[in-house]
Image (cartoon, rainbow, N blue to C red; front, side):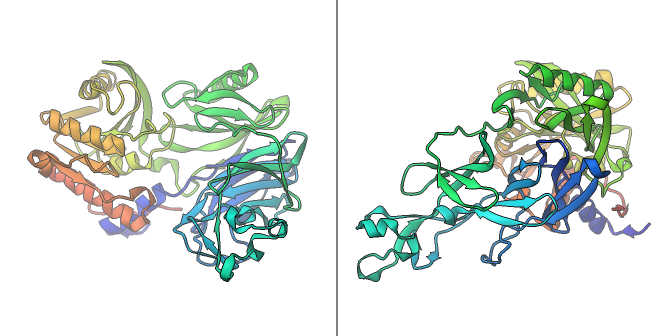
Length: 512
């Protein structure tokens, strides 16, 4: 096995840890025969379709938001905003919206707003007939004052001219996917917004791409943390981020499914991802212990559980540091935490990095935390706090102290070094990290603000500025090399401020 230099090995490890996991989006077909899930193709996003009735036969296609090559300057999609089966044979998906500053819209149009690409595509189950059903340009809206006659109203936008043959002003609307029309699942309901007029709804045929106005007022499906049943058109539960069940179910049948699968996977987090129309097959994720997890399908009539894929097949499980969720009593009520222990500690006492999440309150208890893995690789224990007093609550330091004492009482074999505690904050949590550093320098030796607000570490920060490090914005979207350089800089800062030993001389290259 090759041995890399410390810098090269660190960058290699960070790149692997932050790779998008397989199955971030997944959906099972109405009849339960096929599962579609997102995967990674080199540096592109892909969709794999798996046939459960044919021994798990797989077919993978690259996600191309521009299969006809009309927009050569557009970057390849990296995320989806929608993935559902319209029918057992037809998959519909939508890459994340792409927005750039206003520019000439072509066809004699002058865009009066940003250029928006929000394609909706369809794909047959055999991997054929991939094409764009609709995009923002399908619903382009022109300035109403340019249509001066009935003839103008009947013309496509590109054929309408203003006085003096000046370019016609137009706007590209945002495009929301609302779901399939229950009476005809081959009709997709979409909504436009952000044009000149009020939001409008349309039906898009998933076979032909033909568009018709939809006279109804179809509600937008709720987002996280609510769980929506696309077949019964109602909210059936709510996902949880703390220890315990991954969701609280309003639907008793799904609650039974949750309990049954938790019995099959004790001490693991079970997250129901999707189900067939009759719920005869249920797709679910299983995580725990720091492993990014695996995806299974439960065939209920036969009580058979089958593993479909690993979420990070480029890693071996032994390469992960152990992560465990826990809950303890804080000053303002229960607080959810997650501790990551280094698998290769570098001494009897473990230095501690305390992480305050951003606005969303942190990752679910069983979710894979790549950042915690980076710091644990360097010998730190990593404590992430979620709810309770919250990252901006007045009992911040008290909650940290209570969490450390809770861990010390239950894990005496893993002694935390209370004299070497650093704090790190994301987003709004960056301000909490700064306040903790300012208010209790006896507890927190140094701090880091990642993508935090400008006021964190801003005015009045001079007294403690040597103990504070602000990262460059954009860490979440940074290229692997830049991301690794940021974490290397943070690691060196922590070691300097905590007067702690250097990292290892070399790290063996990961095997993919």
